[in-house]
Length: 459
Image (tube, rainbow, N blue to C red; front, top):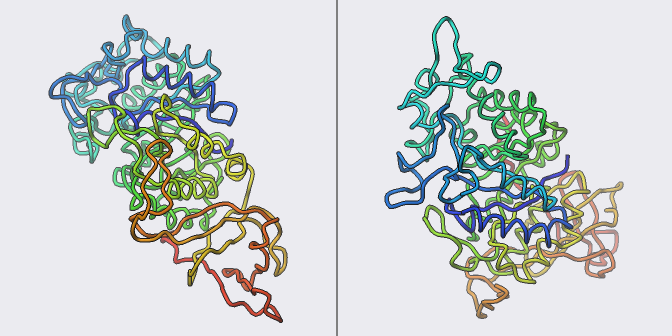
């Protein structure tokens, strides 16, 4: 399995997307991005929540829940779900486009279901789950002391030690497979809400399904390699940062996190269906919304083109899944060219032993090699160009393309060069953790070196 690529509705629609907007984006994705490997069309969170006065990210009482305590698509936003159809018709249309269909899930069970003591479906009998001579309900398996840290009114963990808890998970994921779901993004189960028992229980449940379903887990907060140590083999991809929005202060920490997971040999480690991939989060380019609002796309990304290029290069070098977040109905040529850049996509899928080094001293523009070392010399491959971003923007942003030569945030940018570029010559490996450039000085004495930065803890 290679790092997945696709489109996710969150950055552009928050939780308010409806069936028509989703299918329109999916069709554009099929027409323009599928040839470049983008194949997962994902509806993000709260697709079961009614969009009405008083409803929001952590509201209570607005969710569609079926008789077995399972979330169900809001029929006003997803009219084809009426009559118990769920996402079946949406998934069928997505599959007909040549794409795969995904949904976001909150870990555990709905607080509404627990408070209503809904029965639990036994998928083997088609009736309510019975054990030890009694019928079990949602209130028997919901762990009220383990609610989601950022959605405490919405969901709580499930007791997977109980047979009824495992039965609920089987009924939940069997239903998603019956709908035609190919990808689930499971939130509030990693990082702050780390629940290894539930991760493993969901993983085992997915293995039982006839339809292969990709498992992506999300933390809500950052993750260290130590936290991921015993989990990666149970998932296909896993978020290792908090939400990445269109701000350089959000992008910048990803350099440290990506470096640490690469050093811990987590990139492409054993996973649920072959390999697992550390996920740096979505690409917040193009037309977006804002976090935590009941509003769809209404503004352009705040990242300059240099910052977007830097993010795309880092995500590719770190072999992160590439999930575009902007509204595809407003995808401009510059953004399309960036997210389908053939060299970056090859790096993302077909390189290995990728690593990051951090400069000791950065003065102007330098280039370094991504790939392998042979003895003391670096083999020819993909080069990345470092340049300093000035602390104040001195040129106006082009509203159509989002381009701006400089940024007001300060930092470094990454770009691409090739082995044919004379500026990329002269690099060599001076030690295991350093690469240097001699600038034509005799005896290979280097006047500039770069070294690995300090890593996050791995134990």
